[in-house]
Length: 326
Image (cartoon, rainbow, N blue to C red; front, side, top):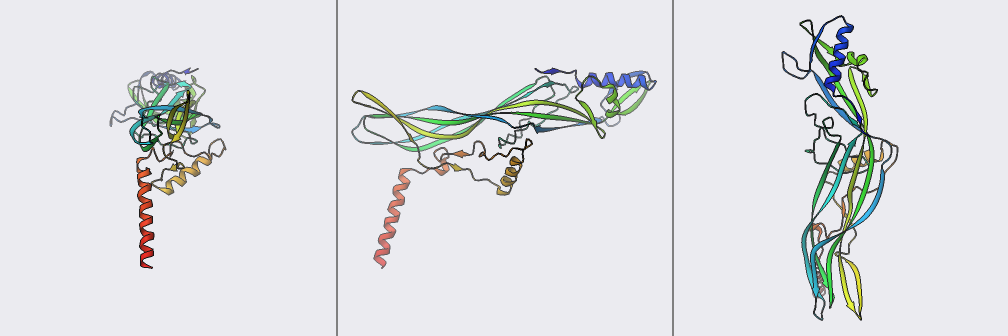
């Protein structure tokens, strides 16, 4: 249930009016712009913090690709898979409050929970304190698939992916810090009033407090994500024999998962330390989401049967050369 608050402009105006009455002044208007410099007289910043431990669950989704092969000959037949697929990470932030800032777009970068350990596009800026209380985005990843498939006689093969999806729910706390002063016009004179001086008159929200000379608005929300953790490619082979239909899966490339090489090992180590020191006191040894892929998904790490044959021929040639020299 989203709690409703009036916008900051109305709250400040009402508090400034009460402040004027308390100081024996006749209130006229309030503004956030300096009349001499035309700059904002208040500054705002936001901090996110995870609350408690995340709730996580895994599910496996099968994605069928358009490429398929049939072998009607009497000999095994080699086919080449060369296609592209896309997988999506779904990210959602839902605020438990509805608090509007005065007539401006206060754009901030949403925070990804520490347990997820993934980056978000720095261009994804949202107005958390606008008209919406829910923000969502899909991060689409392009995955090229290149591999050799050997289809048995009288069989067909369909290419598919098995995607391990991680569902994450993480409550967060959001802190809005408002620092500076407003301009109260009373009896024809302009007076600069610190926002903290208005706190006794801002009684509409129990979530307002002060820290030093800053006015603090504290609320909560929930992050929900559906993230791709592992992606594996398979050839689903189907064979009809003696009136029976047999199906079995063959990995496109029988190699263990290869982790992506970090561009900056020092940065990766620092991020790992930050993750283990989570706000809820829980350590997370789970591998980062989305960086473990089979080499069939990474075109740069492709290992095909042709390359294996060339490697064997090279080794035999070196052995013969060694024997001749000896």
